[in-house]
Image 1 (cartoon, helix red, strand yellow):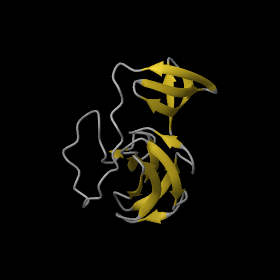
Image 2 (image 1 turned 45 degrees about the vertical axis):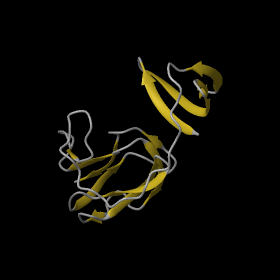
Image 3 (image 1 turned 90 degrees about the vertical axis):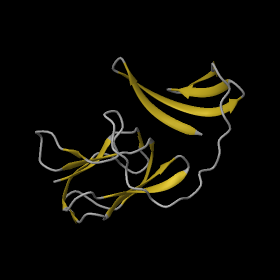
Amino acid sequence: MKKFKFIISGKPYEVEVQNIEGNIATVNVNGTEYQVEMEEQAAPVVAPVARPAAKPAASTPTQSAAPKPATAGGAGYKMAAPLPGTIMQIFVKQGDAVKKGDKLLMYEAMKMENNLLAEADGTITAINCRQGDNVLQGDTLIVIG
């Protein structure tokens, strides 16, 4: 169903939610299956409705879909994952020149295919993901220098 990667107290965990019935979830944590009771019954999953792309709202300190300037390690933009998901395809490689609006990669989030577009002109200086990787919101996927 859904796969997640967590680091808790420095220890990595791979968690796959396999099934949810009422308030009981079947999860697989690092290869071991567990039955987990949730406080509340899970809401039914509703398929998202396609709608026109909207401009990002003013970002909050905890959530930001806008690129973040690179730290002292190099100049440029860090292209972050706007939502948790799975990398489906990467269209660029390190050293490629890109222009604002170029498609960098495609990822699946919330059962929809989404494209990550370049926010600035530049050269790809780092690619921090591979096809098939599960990423969390805010993970730096690509750096444009």
